Image (cartoon, rainbow, N blue to C red; front, side):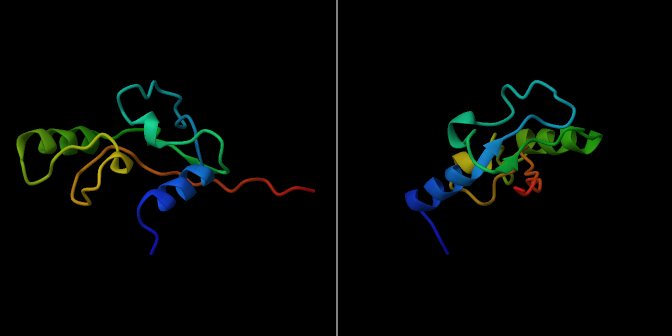
Length: 95
C-alpha cells in the first residue's frame, strides 16, 4: 500500500479536477490545494445534492464523534465526514 508524500504525488499526477455535472459554484466545498488540474482521471463533487447531504453536514456540526472535514485529501483522519464525491470518467481512447 502506498502512503506518504510519494503516494500523494502519484494521485496528483493522475487526477484532474472537473466541474460537477450541474456546474454549481464549488467554492468552499473542497480544498483545491490538494487536487490537480492536469491528470487523466476526472475527480469532482456531487452535481446534484440531496436532502440527506445537509443532514450529514448538520450531524458533523452537532456531534464530535463525526468531525467535519472539507476534503478527505487534506487530512489524515479516516473517520472524518466530508462532502467530496469522486467521479471517474472513462477517457476516450486515441485512434
